[in-house]
Length: 152
Image 1 (cartoon, rainbow, N blue to C red):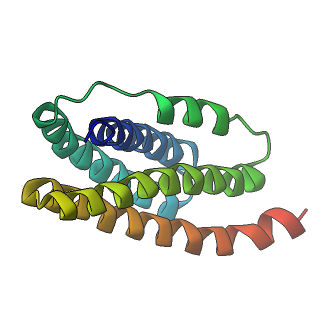
Image 2 (cartoon, rainbow, N blue to C red; image 1 turned 90 degrees about the horizontal axis):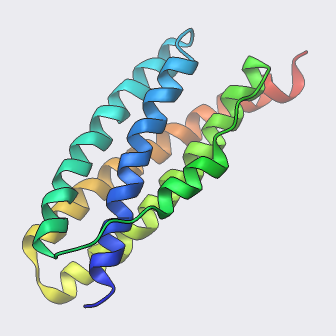
C-alpha cells in the first residue's frame, strides 16, 4: 500500500491543476459561449473533486505531489492566433485530463482490492466526471480542428 498514497496525491494535484486550467480556458476563450460555459462548469467539478480527494489524502496520510503541476506548466503556452489557441488548449486539456483519468483508474482498482468503500466512491465520482470532461473536450476538438487548420 506504499504507492497508493502517492497516486492519491497525484490525482489530487491533477484535479487542482485541471481546475485552474479550466478557469484559464474559460477566461481565455470567453467569446466562445460553449467553451466559457463548459470551462466554468468543469472548474467547479474539479474543485469539488479536489476537496473530496483532500479528505481521502488525510485518511491515507499522503504527502503532496507536484507532478501534474509540472505537466500543466509544460503544456499550456500562450498562442497568438485565436483559432489555433483554442485547438491547442483543448489538446493540452485532453493530455492533463487523461493523466488524471489514468491515476483514477489505478485508484479505483486499488479501492476494490482493499474493499475501501469511501475511497472507491470518491474515485468513481471523479472518474465519471473526468470521462464527461474528456468526452466534451473530444467533441470540441472535432469542432475546432477544421476551422483552426483550414480557415485563414
